[in-house]
Amino acid sequence: SGIFLSFFAQAQEIPRLQKKGTATQLAVDKKPFLILGGELGNSSASSFQDIERDFPKLQQMSLNTVLVPAYWDLIEPEEGRFDFSLIDKTIDQARKNNLKVVFLWFGSYKNSMSCYAPLWFKKDYKKYPRAYSKAGKPMEIANSFSENVLKADNKVFGELMKHISVVDKTQGTVIMVQVENEIGMLEGARDYSKEANAAFNTQVPEALMKFVTKNKKELHPSLLEKWGKQNFKTKGNWQEIFGNDVYTDELFTAWSYAQYVENLAKTARSIHNIPLYVNAAMNSRNRLPGEYPAGGPLAHLIDIWHAGAPSIDMLSPDLYDGDFTSWSAKYRLHNNPLFVPEIKMTQNNGVQAFYAFGEHDAIGYSPFSIENNSELGSKRLSEAYSKLKQLMPILTKYQGQGQSKGLLFDQKNTERIINYDDLKITAKHFFSLPWDARAKDGSVWPEGGGLILRLAKDEYIIAGSGIVVEFEKENEKKETKTKDLGEDGFAAQGGKNNTQNTWLGTSRVGIGWVDEISIDENGKLSPIRRLNGDQTHQGRHVRIGVDDFQILHVKLYEYQ
Ligand code: N0T
Image (cartoon, rainbow, N blue to C red; front, side, top):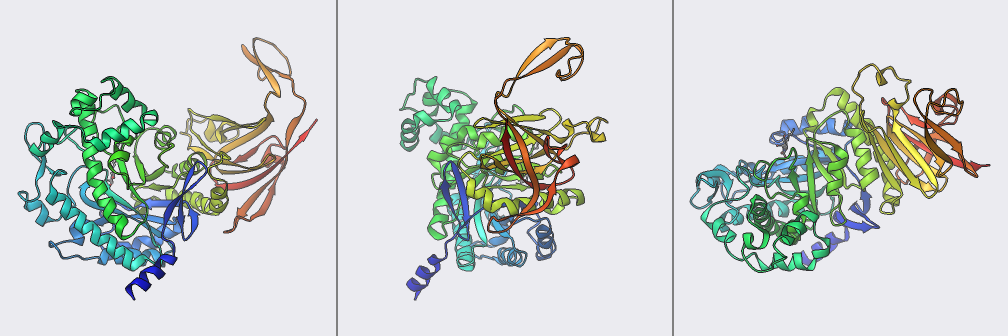
């Protein structure tokens, strides 16, 4: 009956990744799924009461997924005794509140440290040794070269995956697992334990050299350059092949952590084969490796991670500073789909999520410490997520074919031009219109953003918040910059530098109609109301105010 049962269970498809054009999709319950997520604070899943109190709130914020820590110290309080009551509580409350779950394995590594290892492990430092600083100081960081460390972590992680597989095989509530948390080395770019030193001074593993040789044409530019400086040597120790600097120490750390994680990933796959990812703390603010967690799954280390941890599906950025458009672009690569498991919680999360899905076919988006969202933040996020939930069937249907674009504007970046064939779309921040007092009274502009999806040559979905969009034919007019034109009626503004627009086209494009719509689970569009007159500036543009999220359906036409 065991054979029969497991055969039967497999008939229900567990969550998996699939390709569609240039996009990677997460399929849940056999349908492409966008993670409209939030991650719980680190200590918010360690009590039944907190889980019971917070999960209904997450559903009210229109999340479809919650990212929840799975704590080694609480799961294995005594060596070999496993307690999955918090895991069961999480799954149960998620089901009651119509949420999917991503478990975050807080095992040996949590933000470079090993604070989630149980006390029996921490105390037995002879059996479970530490990493050492360059000065020989033992750190509260487990030694990733120790068989015992790996065995202990791998054992409990395997038990966790077994448990999930038993309680969840037929329901698919748990859709992904994050292996460790922001793994990476601090205080220095590598471990200086004697095991680490020995590995650093021997031959770079053949598996890595084979991988970089085979994939030479597609390597991350920074690795290619670094290796190139050593004339693409293929035999030697780390410094001989990659040079003698702190970035070589980091490559070594990346390889050792990737290999460590690969062991856990293989264990997971052999038990319950759902998507796996690793998250990274960013190398932002010009810090050096070791000032930021060195060797984590960072974009510039992607080849090392792919070579060392082929069973991991995605390297995923945790974004706390810097601008969302540039960081997200670094992780949406031909060999890595974008998933944002953590991002600083702000009132701009909603528009950023639209951007991530519209621009990058993202797997998901998830603000951190979600249960502590403010009243206004919760309201904004809920509005954004409930619109994205409606858009899900139609967005995923058109994914991977270059049909959608993301918009994200602030006070400095106010405009984007998008071309579809000979149609030129100019999208701007809503406050580029002088109509709202907040545009000019010194207020900080809230980010405006959204997405544009092309359904047909003359039919578009425009959704989001705080945007205004105009349509014209490419080459419709010629812009000439002139000095002081005086009172020319066609010049944009009087004054010193004028732009003169000369009509050159043959035909023009106009707005046929604009409807605010809702979309049902099957992707059927239904009009809520027609928007015209003042709401489209008498047919000149399409817009969504900064205080609302809307989905608009736009029909264009041509005239001569
Ligand atoms: C995150 C979180 C949690 C201005 C920090 C981000 C979470 C971990 N680390 O609250 O600890 O478990 O993954 C570190 C980046 C902070 C940079 C702040 C820059």
